[in-house]
Length: 231
Image (cartoon, rainbow, N blue to C red; front, side, top):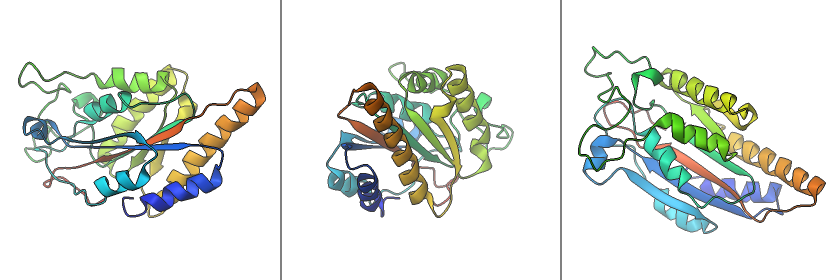
């Protein structure tokens, strides 16, 4: 995705010429890396696509000390983005679930596969925030952020189902999608963003109201070397 980022943006702009497209990025690792001060690559929404590309083009997946990653922290970062009132879409690309045994079926008796934070949050120093993933995903739904989750490995199946249930409970199922991670992922991203933006444009035309800002955020997990799959 990094290599084709600018082409993806240009294609979306071609499909939706009336939109002003804002792009952001959150690369995340895990609590282990949080202690080292190296968990996030966090880029706010911007129209400077070249700057985003330059900052993420060489990102490698590393870090972490177990299979799950700090997905909750990434969502929290996403809520802090300067979202506008137009079409909002976030792409979650990961092959690992969030922490918390409620969200995965990893074998807690297997040292190589277990979740080191089964309660779902970091239990270290007091100044580290305990983030409830249900709350942050619920707020995504409440803010009408279309969430597209790319399913790479079976480890994330249960987590994505839980996320869908949260959107469903908020009566926002139409703003949630699970997609298989395939070679044509670029086309899927372009199509999802284009469809959402055109739908918003249609609504604005019907109501006579136009918003100036359309934006989307890409998430990519930076996974631990012992558990990672090439993305």
